[in-house]
Image (cartoon, rainbow, N blue to C red; front, side, top):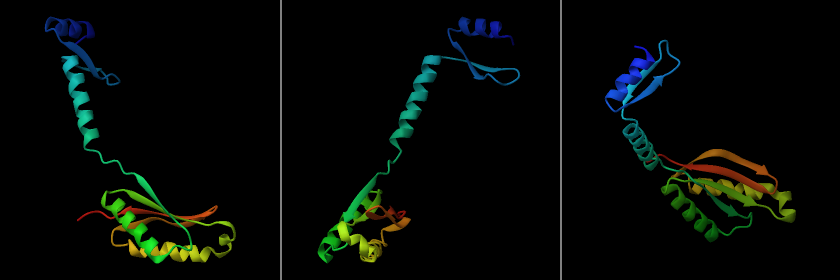
Length: 143
């Protein structure tokens, strides 16, 4: 059908002509109420955004000389982040001459990873970036 006759048919029914596939041969169009169509499309988009879970990256910072009790506090904090479904970036910050003994920071980071391995998986292995030794951990999927 020609576009003029399709437009006339749509206007007789007090509806709109919507081009669904303009690049097709011949172009495909629909006769519908455009206001209602737009409203339903917005409603579907809003519903899909509502069901979406936004994952945040939380950060836990430590030093190489962290005490065992302070480490346990950081572990509990990270576990709460994992239970909320967030990712955690664990970083050990070195000051001054501490950079000469990076292996101490690596031990602290590995101990932290070992303590939270029940709740998380290592997404990014520990790497040294300037004065920070950091790793990214993601929450395990719930069964």
